[in-house]
Amino acid sequence: MAPANTRKDVNTWPSMPSTFWAVVILASLLIAYCSQLAAGTCEIVTLDKDSSQPRRTIARQTARCACKKGQIAGTTRAKPACVDARIVKTRQWCEMLPCLEGEGCNLLMNKSGWTCTQPGGRIKTTTTKAVMRSGVKWS
Image (cartoon, rainbow, N blue to C red):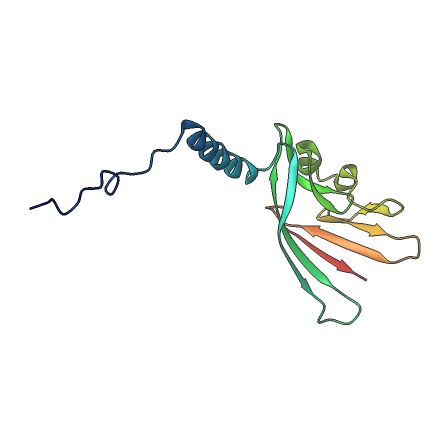
């Protein structure tokens, strides 16, 4: 009587060359690396806008930042950015250049935020919270 299974390769895993495994490991590392932010950069994670009130839009955004030592998440040219931590500590918001080019920046009286005034007179007010969440409204 002949054995039922005479093929030698039926129960063995195919052998892969070491370069295949090197490529798999490098691809995995690249995917893991790409999910990390480069030092000194930020990205917007969430952005919620509410336009239910006439002539006013309230926006809240959350940003994720990977700031260098001595920096903290802030706003530069109306985008999230890493700024000098001293600016946030002293609440001198206009020093981080939060407004777009051509807009004027003014601190709110209680230093809870700033306004950006466009040449046409339109004003954008930004207020900050303890964790740097900001609410923006146009008037």
